[in-house]
Image (tube, rainbow, N blue to C red; front, side, top):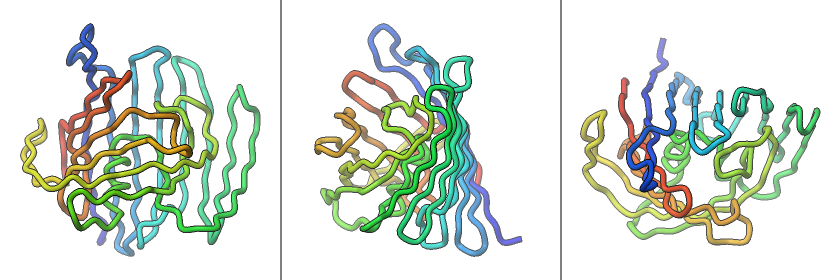
Length: 237
């Protein structure tokens, strides 16, 4: 077998004064890098705070060049089922089949007229992997990423359906980073939602990923009203 697994666990904490450094969620993930160059990501995410809580199970596939291929998402909210959806990326199109109690059965088919930079599935580890699939060269380099999301909500707290967004990413340079999982050479980035076609003024989001082909999320935080922090606690390759 030529496949290779990368798996780990991320802790979510709060930076709000009344909840400083308290746990507010968690995420476990497993990347399988297959022998043909394709990748499968499996992620389980839980967000406890603020109410209502959100749970997310994601299976997401990328082809050998790193383009979205297909994905499935199931999303309980609180203790109730919120919705589930299946996505397929074809030549010049995206298809979505989704169901949720609040939206019923939804079928979507979107034609793509320009290159897509990725699919934002909402797990924290997927944010870092998305950036690692782009070609970066010079610190300070900024580009607008053309994405589709399975939810336009900042926490992904809706039934899955296709939402188009454009969000800027900035490459800030290389650093040595120490997290609970160990010390790593890292690349530092920032997401900025300042355009008319973004997620609705998502606060600035800074993150560090491993400086290698795996692009594993190491640490990061979101400011503004969210005031959150994320840190890699375990990593196995």
